[in-house]
Image 1 (cartoon, rainbow, N blue to C red):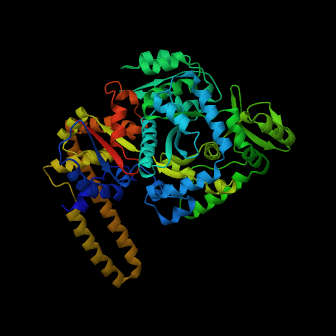
Image 2: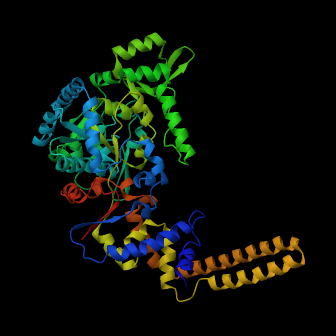
Image 3: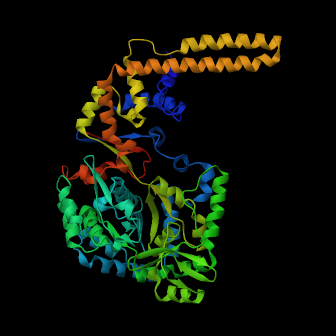
Amino acid sequence: MTWWRKSCLLNKILTTRADIIYAELYLKIVVISECLFTSPVVDMHVQKLDFSETRSFSTFFLDYIQPKESLKPFYARFPEMKNFQGQIQDKAATFPIPQREVLCRVLQQQYRGITPSEKVKRNLDLLKSSTTFTITTGHQLNIFTGPLYFIYKIITVINACKKLKEHYPAYDFVPVYWMASEDHDYEEIKSLRVQGKKYTWTTHQTGAVGRFLTTGLAELADEIPGDTTLFKNAYAKNKTLSAAVRHYVNELFQHEGLIVLDANDADLKKALIPVMEEDLLRHTPYHQVNQTNQQLEQLGYHPQVNAREINFFYLKDSLRSRIEKRGDRFQVLDSTISFSASEIQARIKSNPEEFSPNVILRPLYQELILPNLAYVGGPAELVYWLELKRVFEFFQQPFPILMPRNFALMADAPTLRKMKKTGIELPLYFAEKNFLFNHWTLQHATHDLSTGKEQGTITALFEQLSARADSIDPTLKPYVQAQAKRTASALEKIEGKMLRAERRRHTEKLKQIESVKDTWFPNNSLQERTDNLLNFYPADPAFIHNLIDHFDPFDFRFNIVLHD
């Protein structure tokens, strides 16, 4: 059987979307697998897989990483070390000293509730200097850190600062975690998954999640297996979710000098006043993003987010609701609050903290208040940042370098041993289950399950019949071609039935394969998007430190972390 026929046969009983894409995946992974497992694995060992080989990322994101020429107008600089010199110069020329002073004052206030490490203290002091810059990532306030990729984002930021210091010793670089404390999507932060079980925090609070009281979270920590002391203390000792997240993130990363920033602050929001006025009164960001999105659509890309005419929420107490212009009034949805144009202008100036930017303007807010060079994000984040360059240009702000975060699969030792018994190499597990089942079945079948030979014979026969029919009466040719299609379809169905019958003979082995797949790809998703830090950290206190040592922020490939 040829490689091509074998690859196509693997897909016979997949969903209709799985066709040539998995045939290509199979052919490429065979080569990668030969290289991946030729050397012994000791303790923690990291191997790399190209993003495209995982079939887990959008074309939009992959084109940015290439980088594809057509996307270059949508960002300023690609994330390469050599490009940071120009970024430093641009940011230094546009970040005013008074704004740096406000930032440092606010951070000193926010750190009063905890005892920072020497590295954190040093970085807080370094931020006062005009030769200090930040690398930033942002994330929601998921309970107990949420999915693993939150940890990977912060590690990327930390390592990027270290590498930048090596290349640009005249400057200092501070890693920053921007808490999305103003976000109000409780549904997205309320759950975590540990050892295959989902744990959920139930609360009826509304509004910005950073203001949520931590009631019930310490008790939830008791239900989760393993040592959850770090999180239990954070939730028990802090009233609000924002303060609790700062507490445990500081505990996890303080020895790396990570700075945690809560931008929900009246003094910081003053820098955003001109943007508030431009957005609410003239809808300028809406028009700028729409123009960009039209360009992206013409290139065949689907924009990640869409701008609204007004891109601010009204934020007060337990309320965070969109503002809409209705007639001559600015209405706060789901409330009785409304403003005239003059009233809202006055409110912006007197109480800027009551206005919260949405996903379109939060990035600009970040760059206004931080001496920032680069933003580290996931694939969806970086794609929507590509929609925003016009907005930055309008407000005369340097567009930050967009860096993809590190991506990883933790391949634990027990599952690795089970995987080796299945005879299927790890990279192939990125494919769908049916593909894996068919791959193993074909390798161990005692009969030829392919109808490729018959398909070739039938194709040749119908080509002869089609030519003969056409010479007799051209109107007969479509009929013959239709019969050829029908016969080919029947042969494919026969092939699929034989494959399914063969699979039934290997139920136990296929269950082993399924077990490995479900462990590393829970809910048919990447592990990093589902599993939590508590699956690894309690048993291995050096887990984060080891990842910091092994991950490279400028290596844009997928990390497969092998544990002996």
